[in-house]
Length: 330
Image (cartoon, rainbow, N blue to C red; front, side, top):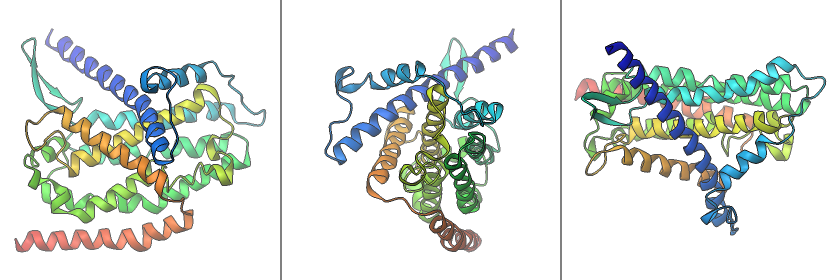
C-alpha cells in the first residue's frame, strides 16, 4: 500500500510539473511578444483575450490544424523522431530542480522535487546537451540544404561552449561539496550566501553558455532566418514545427531555473522563502533572454568558437585554480 502511495505521489508530481512547464512555455511566448513589442514600439498580442492572454492557445490551435508537409526526399523516420528528441530533454531536467521546502499533505511529507539526485548537476548537464541531437538530425533528415546547414551549425555551436559550460560549475561544486541541487539551495539560505556573490565569474560564463545552449539570440545560428530561411526548421510544419519551439522554450525555462537554483538561492528570498521566489527569479531571467534578443546582433559561429575556446575556456580553468587556492588558504 505504501508503495502504491509513493507511486501515486511521484505520478502526481510529474503531471503537475509537466503542466506547469507547458503553461510556462505558452506564456513565455506571450511575454516575449509583449516585451519585444514594447522594446520595438509595437503593440504585441492584443486581440485574443484580455491583454492578448489567449494568444498562446490560439497559436496552438492554429498549428494543430495546419497541414503536415514532408519533402519526398526526406528521411521520414528520423524526420518524425527529431522533434521528440529536441522536445524531451527540457522537461527531463526539471525532474531534479527543487521547487520549495517539503509540504505536509494528507499525513505525508512530500518533497517539492520529483527526485533529489545526489548527482543533480551532472544529470542536468547530461540531459540538456541531448537537445542538439534533435536539431542536427532534423536538419539532416529534412532533405534540404538550408536545413542541413542549420543542423551542422548547431553541432559546431555545441562544440564551442560545452566544455566551458561544464567547467563553470566546477568551482561551485568545490565550494558546496556536493552535486545535489537541494543541498546547494540549502547552503544559500541568506542572500549574502548566494553563489553569484561568491563566484560571479562562474555565473557569467555559465549564463552566457546557457544562452548558447538554448540556441537563443545572439547565438541562434542554427535558425538564422536571414541566412538559412529558417535553418533546421525550414521544412517542418504543423505540430512537428511547434514541438521544436516547445522544446526551445522549455530549455530556456530549464536554464533559467538552473541558474536561479545554483547561483541565486533557488526558492530562498530576502524574506519568507517559498516557490514564488523561484517563479519570480525565473521570470526575470526569461525577460533577460528577451532583452538580449532585442539588443544584440547575431554572432557568426566562428566568433562563438573563438569566444568559447580562447576566452571562456581559459577563464573558467583559471577560475577553478583560483577557487581551489582560496579554499586551501581560507
